Image (tube, rainbow, N blue to C red; front, top):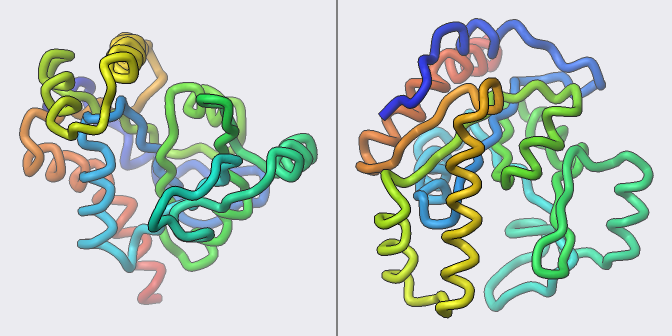
Amino acid sequence: MLRRPLAGLAAAALGRVPTDGMSGPRPVVLSGPSGAGKSTLLKRLLQEHGSVFGFSVSHTTRDPRPGEENGKDYYFVTREVMQRDIAAGDFIEHAEFSGNLYGTSKAAVRAVQAMNRICVLDVDLQGVRNIKKTDLRPIYIFVQPPSLDVLEQRLRQRNTETEESLAKRLAAARVDMESSKEQGLFDLVIINDNLDTAYQTLEEALSEEMKNVQRTSCS
């Protein structure tokens, strides 16, 4: 289940302090291909530890989908507004996908940290590399399926993909899974071949930081 050892991760989580004014609990960056189970793990983490974790709401220039709420699912903004704020340095990371901009603002992370909660950011590989250039100092965790064949089965079961979009997702997943082996890119890689086991691994990886938040809240 653990691709890489966790030695030193807890100490690093408690010892690194951001230098850009973003004080508070150390954030967590979750990354991984679509279909790996990352969103399911994140949803469970927020359900079971809602007083400890908070999700960073991303910005996007795409239109809301049915049922999506501004400020809950995304902050839906115009391209002009987002480009202006990116140029002003208000974003930790941003990327363009299918003609739309997506990004994580510093304000969104600060809002979670201000509540003494661990801010969780769900970003793609490009976002991970962009965050590496900042002073945010999060814990980087990659979630991946046991194989591309398993991933393809999961995506087909969703019944939401065309053959073209499926091929694109699988190609992107192959690149992501190869990149996850890059030395120093991620603190931990979780292979999600069993959801309960993967969740337990995620929980254990963040246990020290969770305890630190709880101690601070009680003091």
